[in-house]
Length: 109
Image (cartoon, rainbow, N blue to C red; front, side, top):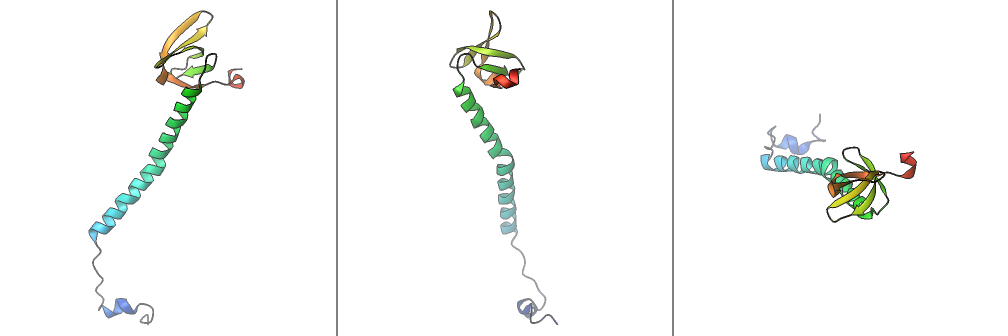
């Protein structure tokens, strides 16, 4: 009945060729790496790049928030540290990596 649809399969007397274990395994590893890259690695790299650009654009007087939740204004910019002013004449030194982001004037109100 199906001879005209699948002639090659019937010509082999019902014996299907054995699948190559290396080809299917390699394909699955490649697919898993592709998913890992697009779901985890690429978004993380983009967020890291955005954070580096934000740190490079900071200047004296910008309002920031630290990773610990402390709000303040940038008083002095250093190579690896920042001095921020959290209240009048209250200044603290923090590491550059601990700055979570810039706070806009609309957000601080």
